[in-house]
Amino acid sequence: MTYAAKPLHGEIAALLPRLRRFARSIVYNGEDADDLVQVAVERALNRSAQWEPGTRLDSWMFRIMKNAWIDEVRSRIRRDNIFAPEEAGEHVGDGFAEAHQQRLAIQKAISLLSEDHRMVVGLVLVDGMAYQEAADVLELPVGTLMSRLARARSALQASLSDQARTA
Image 1 (tube, rainbow, N blue to C red):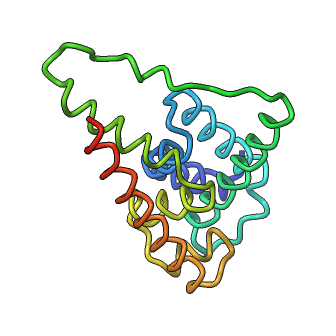
Image 2: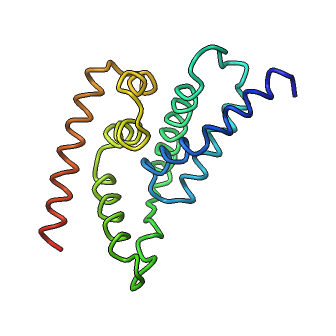
């Protein structure tokens, strides 16, 4: 390992919580989210020569993760394989059931969003990225990102309201 690669490894390691949070916002299954983070980190390390020092490492990593997820979705479509979150049955009957039900309701509402809207929600609402940064990661104009975010928020509100009425 070269001397220049050592700081990059440390910076990538420092990003792991944010990468995992983004992965969970678009994947929902903890194991699949961890796998997505692993794929993104592996790709980044294998292509570390492509990263330009002085540019934003987090944006580069989020873009790698976004592309890895797109690859996974395409692969799943080809395999015609649908995964249901195993977490749906966890914590039934314990003291955390209500909070868990709220989390599941939010996850369900987010899962009903289109992939484009889930990515915007993951970067802006979950990770707290600025609009311009998220637009750069997703390779979109900032106006497109803002309109997708507005539509995603409206869809989330409608979905959560519907879930509350039927509960």
